[in-house]
Image (cartoon, rainbow, N blue to C red; front, side, top):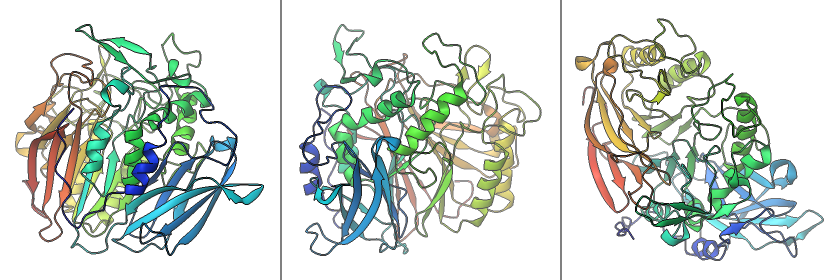
Length: 524
């Protein structure tokens, strides 16, 4: 086991004793079939609770029932729930896979909110299941409290699922003990294209043992299989404890559908009977919106959008990007003009507009793919922004150049890029003094992950935007299991008094790299 991180600083969020006990009691078996819970007695919420897209005065609460039920949320300023406010949520049924989200509004800013979810029998509202508690902290409208959050991505990838011999996804328990204000999940929240088998033989002959489910025994094609893929990670009690205490900001990338997918793609993959990537993406997006509390995605609907901005008080705005849904086809990525690029014209215009409107000290751009790392898709095509040509911007680089030029000319300060995707951790500083493209202000990009997937060697840097890499830690071979290599996540700490932003790149058990950035300073 990795050593435990230090206890949170005094005055931070208290440990959620009640919900931890409740989550521990909800441990699910190593082999699960649907439906996972019996239908006798009162409605049950065996998949835990979670919150998402929390702001200064609002938040979304999520739950899944084992049968039709009315969702009810009670909130209180204390764990005793002596005084409560009741929120009547949706009726949970098969149309949303018995999941539902309730929006809480008018909450006090900068306060600890204790909540519990009750599931009521639709035919007899007095019959409710055991309440499932959780907690979260609203963002503060004042600077004094500061902001601290974590980020990472890449969960249940390459066939490395929930291993009970290792204690499951134990990195989630380490992150929970750090007690952040929220967690930014940078995509690849599932691996719909990677089945989870009962056992995998490691290079040294040891046996990796997975929790398995029927839906995860094959690639996801139907809506039911996508729902099962999103449900899989909730079998882990570390994840359920984490979700009950830490709000999430979720984005998606390729593995929610298929490796390196893009709109209009027809899959060349013999494992699939459904070859239309757009059809698979629509099914996945619907399940994605059912299993995560996301403000722009209505539960049970394949419409809506993933990209959005979350205002977290005067210190921080988080701009959540979607580099998957609106991109052009993967190609050699050297076209001299590229309107659609990796963001699409509409999303790029939205991002420029919202960055210009932001008055937050720091503008975190949550990118599901890195900018200057060369991520290939086969022998000649490329998957991310860069393509390895260190010269003037080409292909998808043109959209990024337009965005960086806008940030410079509008004098937008405090932009920091956070991402995952490549299954290792690194820090990149981009500087026009080293770049082929000169019309931008220096900035930092930080990479962290995976959380529960295979580790991969570092890829090359592309010189177009002048990246320099003061830190990188990556395996030397492909698909190193979590049993052989620590998992990675990052921490961002914004000081309320000075406005300093500190980034820590972490692995299970400790800090690997630290960078302190000063507010309003260009070229740091």
